[in-house]
Length: 75
Image (tube, rainbow, N blue to C red; front, side, top):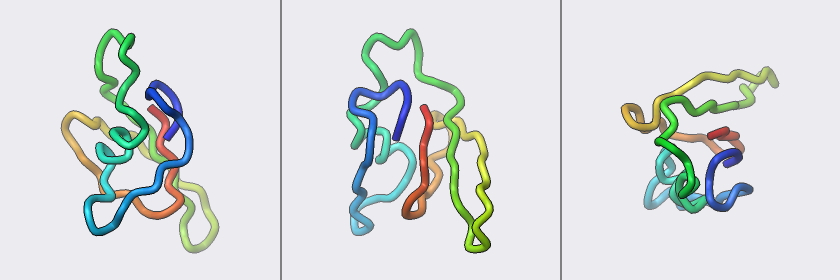
């Protein structure tokens, strides 16, 4: 998890608890305290089985996307 979070970097998510977007942001310390507002767009990057990099945007306030191992989240 990178970008406007308290502790950017690698985050380990326990699959027995939750592997969703908001859990990853929370594990990175949550959104930066000095942010004017909660971001309405967060980018997720994922490598497919064919080795292609796909990226898409998610609104974390409305959609709590399930993450896969090695996904990269940009807040």
